[in-house]
Image 1 (tube, rainbow, N blue to C red):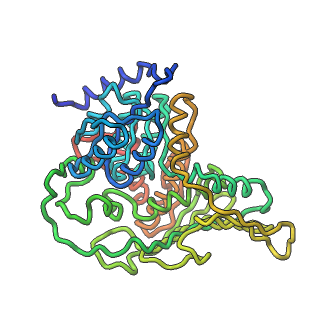
Image 2: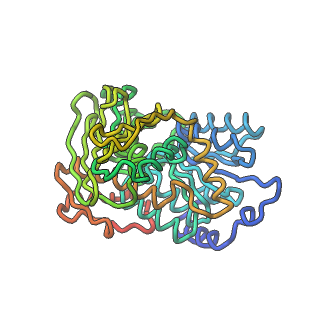
Image 3: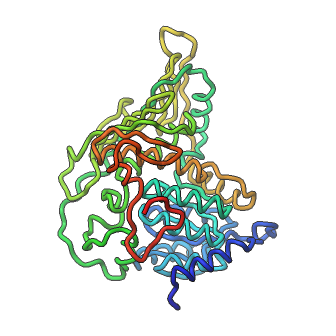
Length: 431
């Protein structure tokens, strides 16, 4: 395959973005939505499996930097569709395809922005796993790419499509709880813990490690910094704050609206885990919004949350409270007020299929999906701010309109991140 320079790519992208995708204008009875998978790890395989449960979806090509992971995606497509997809290790080869309508981006966080931005420029719609990007500045770039190129972008936090979550949010927003002054969310997870201190070594056979690093700083290969565990290193992700935090904060902000925090503080550290990871195993973040306060907590190596359950959300109003977790949601009346009745509602079914279907339907309607780029960027930004406060050890003051930390240069620098040559991010505000 010939080399593909950035200038050539942007020329191709600009041309493609101006050409309508006729299969969405007036699809025939046998029309297929052709999805290209970028990132064949656990989330990528799980998402693709969900996409392929719908008969109107096909997958002509899959991409990963690891031959072993590519093989799993090929096996899945062959089993579900009866053909082997093409395979590549460079995501740009997926974007270049005329027989790809939408991208499924399920890479490590530091690789969310470029495939999504380049895809939008090339006229592709994108389903991107959460968080939207590794930094706030990258999230802004995705937002601009989606809006300027009129692309549909759905962030893959499926709870937004869950019936029971929607019902709870509707109740909270009904005003029955009265003034909500505090919201709390927590994740005490026993399936993540110490992973030791392996020495640096050579990448496994069949892995393009240089491509895996991409715009991130050059580092020697270490198995702990690779594949699933990448999320515990600042070069690539933001730990549990931007992993599980995005899931739960998403519901909190769905209920409370799109206002932004003005002050954020955070504390914690590596208080239980002894290994070479960098992100905190224990963290508390406090977000001061104009009309309420939000508290986030997480712990690795388990523990029980305030509800005796590993994770949940609690909305406290003057008339009562709402508690939400995987078991469902319940209304807890304020005893002295006596304006509410206690209620318990069971959890709904798995929301992932509905979340994917919402994205697929929006490709034809051109409407915004439920976790659209505005919502995805907002939710991810709040999570990132928790980490900015933690990493600097300072209370940060946030100007949401300018997307700047106004009181601390160190924290403001973390709004973006430098890119390693030759990679460049279009639409970025920070150099």
